[in-house]
Length: 210
Ligand code: ATP
Ligand code: ZN
Image (cartoon, rainbow, N blue to C red; front, side, top):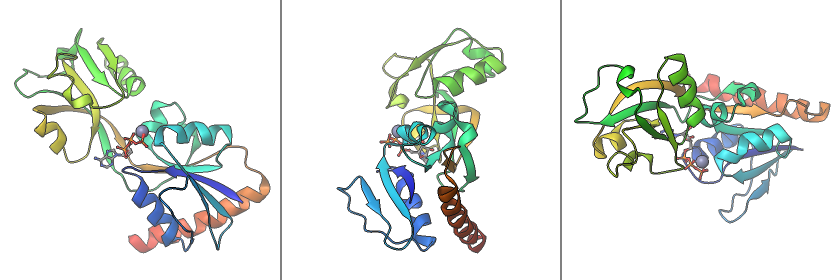
């Protein structure tokens, strides 16, 4: 039996479950249960917070998982990627209050930036030769400038409407993300065979969608 970790409830959940179903894998899904077993494929599904998925897969608590690349790379676990899945596409961007003068990243030199992605942000600033104070906060990043917590933010954007409704302007796109399938690197032979069967079906689903 292969153990798959997916997000319990959030922006990855529906598309993750749909992919499994499109692979012809049936299971009973109760919103109260944190674990379910497929009735027609050797797969067990764990429902977790997305942030915990890379760690659980790396440690072997789960064998495989579905998570956003933004979270995976932030946690330094990009080596676990098996396949890009093409959904939950978004980007990590820098944004400033819309009245702020901004011509280049140099304008953020010495400024403070609020984010939930300190590692991705730090790597980008370093590569660009800019030093800024990074305030790590776990949520509601968009309100940080308006409450005086930071001069700019670095957050996940898809349509950009959340930024606009918070009076912010996107100024740099620093990372592109989509959902990825990840795997523990020490699967047993038996689990590798199940994963190969699963990937065969995933590829068929992907081909059918093109
Ligand atoms: P959890 O409670 O599991 O920790 P969360 O609040 O951290 O959830 P979500 O907002 O559900 O996370 O986002 C999960 C992932 O979906 C993100 O890490 C990102 O990869 C992707 N994502 C986030 N926002 C969007 C968006 N607006 N459009 C598409 N994908 C997004
Ligand atoms: Zn999360």
